[in-house]
Every structure is written in structure tokens, then in C-alpha cells.
Image (cartoon, rainbow, N blue to C red; front, side, top):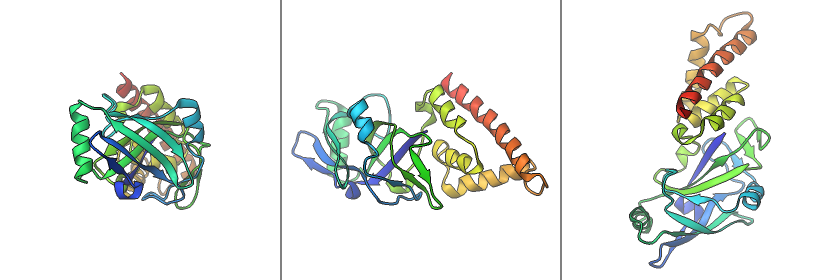
Length: 231
């Protein structure tokens, strides 16, 4: 699935240097618990940095024109440390620099792909031990209470289809709705509960079987959504 994790700039310790638009800081901090209960473990980014190199830099996860480049991206004991440089002469880069300097741009977010096997589920959230692909790190407008989000329009049909194919339980569905549909955790749970009522899952003796049928029906509809997005 395509996952994004956002931190406040004061959490990532971002520092803007001089007039050249160069900055440094932490794009992710290890061992903490975010607003969805997820924890990223040291070593999570090692393989993607080794195999795929440094991530791209965009503003607000808009995967069109990069606004700069990362000169350094590496793990240390604290988290994922980056040094970046905003592109000179690019108007959006100048705007981002001004907003950073004025501290009105108050978030930094990592974006990439994780798969089942990259994380462990716990009662409170995921323990993420690996990011299969760290695609980009964006200065963003919203802080950590909007931590995990997917922009379906930016995801290829195959990638969205792969995320949908990993839905095997009501919990997976709630997580997909939260990430892909930008539902809050409570809203995703409420929607799934309502869908179960509408489809007749609640109150039936063979609830588990009915739930499986409901999941299959929802899977088909979500696949259709993925195909329409990729068209």
C-alpha cells in the first residue's frame, strides 16, 4: 500500500540554512507512536535507500514538478536524517522556502510503499520494520494528525489493485478506507459497521460466512474503483 507519514517540523528538527534554500532535519523519528498507533523501527529505510537511492522532493505530495533534491538521506540512531536543497529560480521552491522560513509550512511527510510482511499488527497499531520503497519526502501543510493518507489519483492502477488485493479482513478494509479514502479512524470503523448492517452481516447466525461474502463484494467494487482511476 502507498503510505504517508507526516510529522510537525518541530518534531523533525528542520533547519533552513542561508539564502540558498538548503535545509536539514529528520523526516522520520524511530520508536515513537503516531496518531494511528504506528511505530517505525530503526532499519526500516536501509534497504530502500541502498536499492533505490535518495527519495524525490515534492510539495504536498504533488508528484509533478520536483521542488528540489535531497543531497543526503540516511538513518542514524534518532531517525531518517535528510539534507535537501530547494531548486533556485523555481517559483514554487521560492514559495516553499518563504513558508519554511516564516514557519507557516509546518509539516514534513515521507511517502512510499509498504507491503504485508513489512509490518506487524498489534492491538494499538502497526510496528513498521521496513519500507519497501521510499519514493519521496514532501514539505506539507498539515501536521501529524493527518498522518497516513493515499492520493488515489497519484497511484497507478496496478499499485492500487495490489493494495486492494491485500484486504483480507474487516480491519484491513478499515485501514484501506482510512489511508486511501482519507477517512478518519473513527469514520472508517463507522462506515464498515454500517456496510455490514446494510449487507446483512450483523445478526445472522453465519456471520463469519456473511462477512466473507460482504468482503468479496466490497473487494469487487474497490477493484472497479482502481480500474477507473487507472483509466
